[in-house]
Every structure is written in structure tokens, then in C-alpha cells.
Image (cartoon, rainbow, N blue to C red; front, side, top):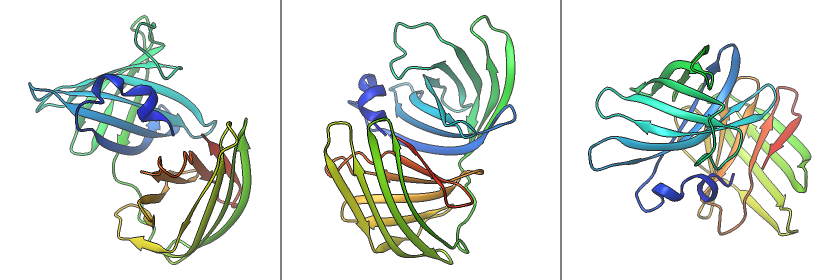
Length: 228
């Protein structure tokens, strides 16, 4: 995902901390990805997105988190650049001890629904699957061949084609221990597989020098959806 390039210009000069959480917004399962940077007063500037998993619709957020109590207010919008644009909603809550919970409000302050996210993902020690799929979203394309047996990687080959026609690939045969998921290593690139409820989410990190892979969501039948 191109989150860092799109969302974090104001905090790019500071060390960022990435947090991934799974949970629900109302009754809808969602995946939340936040990047934050600490300010001089101990508060944190926050930006990221959450993905409604039933439709893979993205909602972008930015705001701040207070020190100590973790009071967090995030402005929400449907476009990556939120600065200068009216919010479509606002998430208000507390983010402490790996839990972010609170209420989502409409632009007029009307209460819409409660939300809760946790950094604790299900363990995949016994996960086994063989997945082969080719998917595209617009001009982005991905081809994936993944084999895992009882939490151990057998093989991973992931090829991607971006809208500019640039092709790249990640091939992994090594694995690192990871709590709440599986982590595969391909040189400087790391690939994580996590259980996010209705899907398994396959994401690549630190692969910018190789390519922008996006995220592949794999359903329980082995079918794939691509989110660039």
C-alpha cells in the first residue's frame, strides 16, 4: 500500500511506529493500520486507514493520541489526503494496552456506532493451505502461489504488475517467529500473513526497493481479492 507516500508527509521527519489491529466498526469486521509519531509533549500524531472487510472499502483517518490516558480522536475521510477537506466521520475513543475502542460520530456530531480494535491477532501455528490465484484491481495485477503446512512455510512466490507496467516479484523460503500471524522473509522484504476474520491478509513490508505489492485478501475457499 502507498500509505507512507500519501498520508504521512507531516510526520515523515519523525520516527514512525506502525500498529495493525483487527476488530469491528459496528457489526462490520475491519482491519486498522495506523502510523504514529511522538511529539515533544508525549502526544502522538496519527494517520492511517481502516478497511471494511465485507466490501474492502477504505476509510482514511488522521488525528492525535494523548499521552498517558491514550485519548484518541481521528478525523475520517474517503480520500487519502484529509487536510483541508471536511470529515465524513470521526472516531473518538481511547487507545491503550493494544486496544482502541470508542464511538464513531457523523460529521454533525451524531452518534453512529461503536468500534473496537485489538492488536492481538489469532495464532496461525496450525494453519495449512495451498493457494494459487491471479487477481487484479484496475491496472494492478498480482499472481500468488503460497503453500503453508501447520504454520510452516513451504513456498511463496508473489508477482505484481503496477499501472505503469513495472513488474516485480517476491520469492520467500525463510520464516521468522511472529506472534499472531506468520512472517516470511525475502531479502530485505518481509511478508506477513494474518487472520483478519473473513479473510487471511497477505501484506508486504519494506519492499519499496523491489515493488509495491499491495495486499492480497484470501477467503476461506482460497479465492483472492487485491487491494493495491
